[in-house]
Image (cartoon, rainbow, N blue to C red; front, side, top):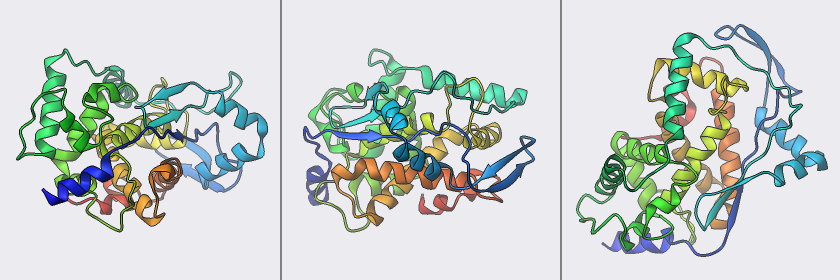
Length: 302
C-alpha cells in the first residue's frame, strides 16, 4: 500500500499540456552507405534515418511549418500528438508485398481501425482484464471509477483516453501485462531507477506509444513506404503478434531513455523522439532476423 500511495503521486497528471511531436520520415536519407536488402530486392542508403530527417526539419522553415500545421490527435488532456501531413508531391518509395505479407498487414490494419467502444462486451472485458492484471488484489468498483487514475489514466473513464490509439492500444497494454508481467509492473509502479517527482502517466503513455508505432511504421498505407516499415512487415509475416511485441519493446525502451535522460513530465516529447530514433536504428541493424534480436529486447523481463 505504501508503494501504491507513492505511485499515485507520480502517476497523477495535471492540466499542463505536453505536446508530443513525432518526426515523420518523408523519404530516404541522403547520407549513409549503400545497403542491399535481399528480402525486398532493393538497394538503399543505410544510415541514421530519423536523425537526417530531424536535421532537415530544423534547417528548413518550410518543413517546420508543414509539420506544425498538421492535424492534431489528442490523446487525453495531458499529452497530445502533432502529426505531420505528407506533401502531395512527396515521392516516397513503396515496397511490394508477398500475398502472406498483404494478409498480415490487412489483419493488423483491421485491428487498428477498431475504435474503443464501451458498449461492446468484448471491450469491457478487456478493460477489466487489464485492471486485474495490474491490481489482482484490488476489486474494480466499475468501468468508470476514480480507481483508474492509479494506472495513469487521465480521469475516471479510461474510454476517453483511447481516442488516439483505439482498441488496439488496450490490446497492446493487455499483451504487455500478460507476456511480460514483471516489466509491466516495473513500469506501472516506476520501480526501477532514480525517478522524477513528476513522472509520465503509465496508461496514457502506453496509448501514445501505440499511436507512435502506427505512424512510424506507416501501417495505414496500402504498402510500406519506408525501409523500417518494410522490415517490420517481414517480421509480421513470421509472427502475428509482432506489433504487440514491438510495443512491449518500445515501452521498455522509452522508460530506459527516460531514466538515462533524467527526464520529467515536460520532457516527454524529447524522450519519445529519442525512443523513435533508437528504435529505427535497431530495426535497420544487420543480422536482425526477428524482433527478439533487437538490442532493446534484452530490457524486457517476464
